[in-house]
Image 1 (cartoon, rainbow, N blue to C red):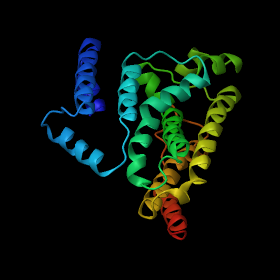
Image 2 (image 1 turned 45 degrees about the vertical axis):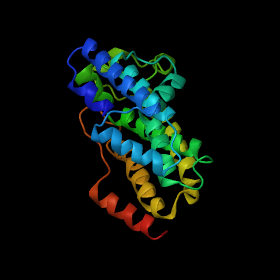
Image 3 (image 1 turned 60 degrees about the vertical axis):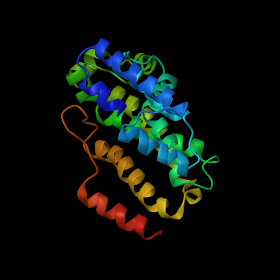
Image 4 (image 1 turned 90 degrees about the horizontal axis):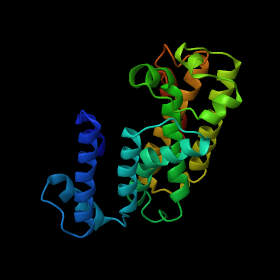
Length: 239
């Protein structure tokens, strides 16, 4: 819903107005005075059924605000913070539904999965983000440290500096995927298989980039159908 509001708005002012409206609607929901719109009625039903927290919903709106006011992050910490707000918050929204008994213990693993997926998006879409929306999600400090410039990125340069830059972020993503998978057994039984499968398929995008010699400028990298079937068989064998 927040994503749709941003996408449909054509100017920054319209984007700000859309998010202000959603924030006001969320405030009303928190006060028990939500509108009769089906989305809010459905959300109330979810809150009645599960031990939900309102904060991740506010955090998602913060992420949308960060998105339309976007500036290239300076540090890796800022990249991970942005990733929490736009994606990790979604994991925390879902957590009480897919881990009804242990959700309070699983905040960090759920957050890790959301952040890992967003970092994967960033690494997959480096070229597309720059060409289509003139955005660089790679941190300034790391680019400077490795002597990889904006001009290099604009030209789609794949050299040792780029590979080191890419792999340093991929390593963080893969560690977060691992942190999540180590806690998978604490999720509800009927949630473990789909969550494990989706995380493995998404993590597979990183290997697809590697197999394409780190070309995330001219190729749309994805987990191949064959790889998906292999992952499916492997994950299925564990449940």
